[in-house]
Length: 244
Image (cartoon, rainbow, N blue to C red):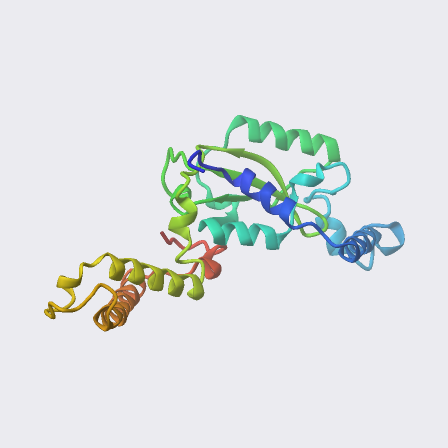
């Protein structure tokens, strides 16, 4: 529980949980066949743009299937961990030699010059030199998925998910406020919430305190969101603009 985790582990865990139903597997295979048909000789002229683009993206044939992820899976991980998923041009620092080596191997293997790379990491990792956060490098595939080429950096601390949870969306923020208010209310001794010396721990004063604190913490949260321009992870995971 306290050993930490990295992006690669979380993606593989999510992929193992998202087991396709038999009918979904059939649909996926049909989509693959349709996508491959675009590049047959008789269809090249009608799909010339896609055909030209095929020399810049990976063909999923021959790739390790467990490292191929859909855009929806990458979005889910980015939101859950409050990460950015951006074009590699937004990463102004050097990537490890191992990543370059793997890209060269893929280029030779598929006879292409792969482009359109994406990097997943925290927002601060894209602006701070020498950052040791966890990174993951992806390349697009013909079918619109992404192939995990390489991951590097330090593992995230075990509490990273807890820190990212409140700002996933409005529902998780509301739940966090309610739970925090409940914990604070329950931790207050009775003499701090009422002057009535006959009041017991479980009394109406405590319920009233809960709702007063709920209003207070909601107001503070709203001020922080507006004043510090905090936004939900679901709306900024692909935005190049900075957020914490």
